[in-house]
Length: 372
Ligand SMILES: *Cc1c(COP(=O)(O)O)cnc(C)c1O
Image 1: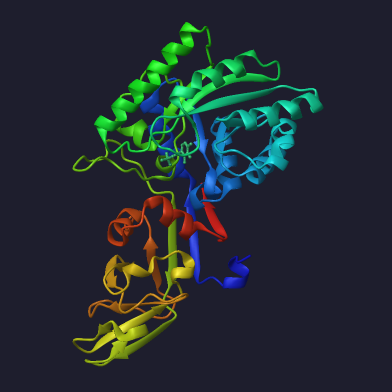
Image 2 (image 1 turned 90 degrees about the horizontal axis):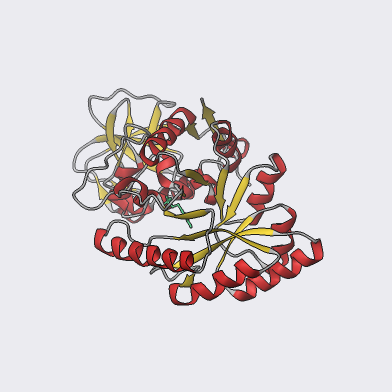
């Protein structure tokens, strides 16, 4: 696997834990007494699973959301008392580990439940589960019409405890759709109540729901991801209500400087042709590092707070920028690619890639420096 040793220090990823704490506090203020499940899937959105976990645990977060069982085992080996919600169905051969490591799976079908019960019987143990309801995402989750039957089954099983009932909102940017889906979910909760089924936790909120909606008091747990890492997506024409701070920064440096004459072309396929003589800087960072190639030629990085336009195609491990006439640089000059001054918001708008995708790609495989 790649790390700084094999890459040299051509790039530095800095994870600012103060900003993570700032974001966590904003979330706490918004939600009040509800329980927080910190979503750490995708290597904590490219921020590094273990370090982010340890930091949040030190800030009294006790619930964590994951989609990969290997990650769950890793965290449980660090602290067996923390609670882990497994957002998606685990592979059949891993079901024994759900029970062994006391993980809390999201469940949505009988076949999975039967396998879990069988393992519980073998291990002479019980398990807590959260029933995942599909209210329009059409992803992992049981359709609402079939949910009562399965909830009743769990309620009556001697191996299963229905600790939670939850759902996931597909389009929080659309108020109308979201309101309708929440009403359906609340209606289902009412049905459960009438059947005397009272799960301890009810939850539906991702980042987009937490920041843009008034949260119903029935929801006593929330599952933020993106906002922890400092970004939020607000409905069109609406400014984000909270001032989240980006946690991840990415820096590189100029390794080579040269002059280009008017009319010369730069990088593959010559999509950039110099309109005048100019100076360019070569930066050892490319799409291998998660920089989307479609920002070629027009987006910019910052050197000494000055915008330096990318010229020509971004390559696998290199990008080229134009050095403005009034900017003094030398080899080794620091280049800001993602930072508080140049956030993923800009790159996301420009490349039409989501914040999620960019963070995962940029944060991947990298030795990171943690500031606290
Ligand atoms: C990823 C995920 C979340 C967090 O989503 P954000 O939009 O990052 O807040 C919450 N719940 C489930 C089930 C998820 O898969």
